[in-house]
Amino acid sequence: MLSVLASKARYVKFLVNENSTTILTGVGVVGTVTTAYLSGNASFKAARILEHERWSNEPNGDVQAIKDLSKVDIVKLTWHLYIPPALTAAATVTAIVAANKIASKKIAALAIAGGLSDRALQEYKQKVVDRWGENKARGIHDEIAQDRVDGMPVGGREVILAGSGDVLCFDMLTGRYFTSSVEEIKRAENKINHELNNFMSASLSEFYSEIGLPPTTYSDNVGWNGNNQVEVQFSTTMSSDNRPCIAVDFATPPIPDYHRVYD
Image 1: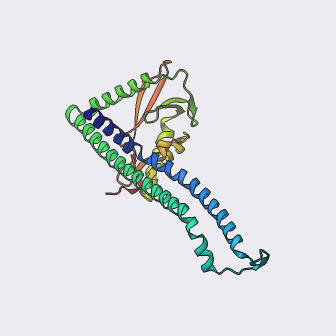
Image 2 (image 1 turned 90 degrees about the vertical axis):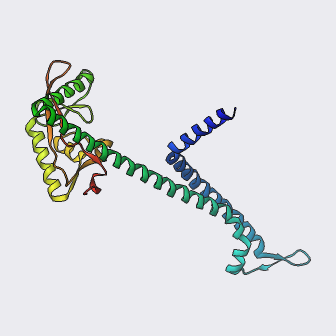
């Protein structure tokens, strides 16, 4: 029985840790609404107390003149009403700050993991070249590209009319088909490398913009920095409807947090 309870407790702890940002954000939203409600309620009650206090009665019950209440009197009469909204506001701010810190840590961890994965990938690619030679490594990459195209058949998918070229292309990163040409894509590569040389960073969305593809959430958050030049890799494949298809990939994949990485 104790082992079952311990197992369930660990599972609950795992769920809380995994969803801590969502939970804290929800607490912040609820806290904001609750603070507004409690503040309004406290103001309403304070107004009634002050209104009652301003009017005094004669001993015979007749209404006397309005009292003048000083700021000190007002605070003494109403301060206790604002304790609940103040506590709720403090808890709300704490939850929002905590959610932001946790989200920042997760983003930093993902950036580090992405950097490590990218380095491992580059080392693996280089080892394949060293072991089997440039031509063999190129053949392996082409086979991977063909497998990716086969796994995402063009039939039934939207083909984006991205540029002036009419060659069917496949973006290996986002799995989108579009029409363009090698020349247009190479021009976009040169433009982004120019941006890197002059401004030290460029996002994947900027590359997509150059070839006429709409950005994605992913492309908005990854890119390259001054450490690496963009090098587009082309693989000639056949689409599911037997059309020549150029698979577009990058020798150096875009990384998260690219605008901060200059080491």
